[in-house]
Each structure stands twice: as C-alpha cells, then as structure tokens.
Length: 113
Length: 111
Image (cartoon, rainbow over all chains, first blue to last red; front, side, top):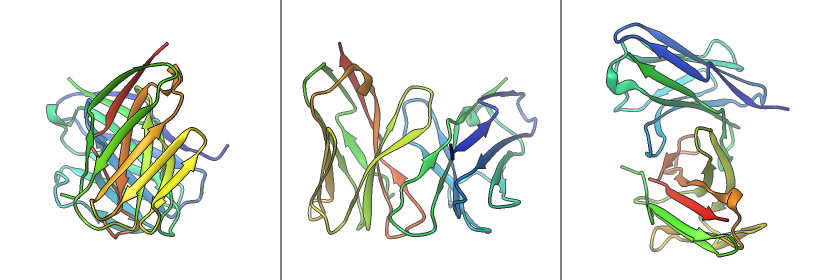
C-alpha cells in the first residue's frame, strides 16, 4: 500500500546531541511537511517542501533544519536538541494541487535525556 | 495566527449518541479539512469542504461550513467506541500547500 513511513517510531537522544528523523513516501506527492506536536496540542507546522522549494515557518527554531534529497525522502535534523524539543514529529505529504488532503505517517516520538 | 480554535476541548458521550465539535478560524480560506488522530498515531484525513460549499456528508460524518462566521462543525452520528480519538480541523489560509490546525477536540465514546 502507498504510504508515508517514519523511522524510527521512538527516538531517544541526549541534550545537545544532534538527531535526524526520517520520512519516506511511496505516494509520489510533490509536497512534504514536518510538524511538531506536543502532548494534547495541535500539530505545529515547522516547514514544508514544494518539490525542492523549501519553506520555513517564521517561528521555527534555528536549530531545526530539513533536507529533501529526492521526491521520496525527507529528513528533519535537530542540531542541538533541548528539553523543550521533546515531542511527536509528524511527516505528511500532499499532491501539488490545492485542496488536497494530507497523508500522515505515524510519527516519531522524540525524548531528550 | 491562522490557527483555529475548537470546542469543546473534550467531549464524553455514550455509544450511539451523536457528537458535535466546532472549529473557528481567523482568516479567509480556500478549504477546511477535518482529521482524526488516535492516541500515539498520525492524523487521518476525514473530509474536506471547500469555501463555496455549505455542507458535506461522508458516511456517518456531516460537516458544515459558515464562511461568514468563519466556523465549521463536524457531526458524527451514531457514535461507536472506535470513534474515540482527537479531532482536528485544518485550514489553508489561501496557500494551497500550507495548513494550520486547530486546537482539537478529544472525543471519548463510552461503550
């Protein structure tokens, strides 16, 4: 089945130690998104790719970066994670055209020690 | 912020009852979507309503949109225990490829 896959499901890292979360899709969608979701809160958009065009939200912390080497893969790099970065990170995709639903992976839950 | 507000924040009902949750947003939109999120999982798309539509149905789901009031409602009829989840609305803020989520309603359906 076509889907969005996030690895790993659970990630533990140490305070200040860089970590990379990955997302892959078999839907061949042009748009990929990264969201941060803290407990009992709404998903918060961090950035999105429109093909290779990168769009950063104004309030996304500077230590969050992303790479999209090809259509299928997208990575979220957190350069120096702080305790406040502990959250669920969700990847989603959608088609290029407007008014299309987003397809989400099951997320990576990041814990910071 | 474009992010919407949903109410109630939490809703607890008995199986078989109807559940209604509301979403309000701040700026003009092209479309509004509703998503469900089971605990510890990703979001699942439920239904999309365009700004020129007033009502839409999908199975046991009924969505209304009032652009003059900048609000939408999601009605789940004849609820089941499996409907227990958090429900979020998302709006696109005139940018087709960018979505903002509301604060969510946590629905608990008791068997």
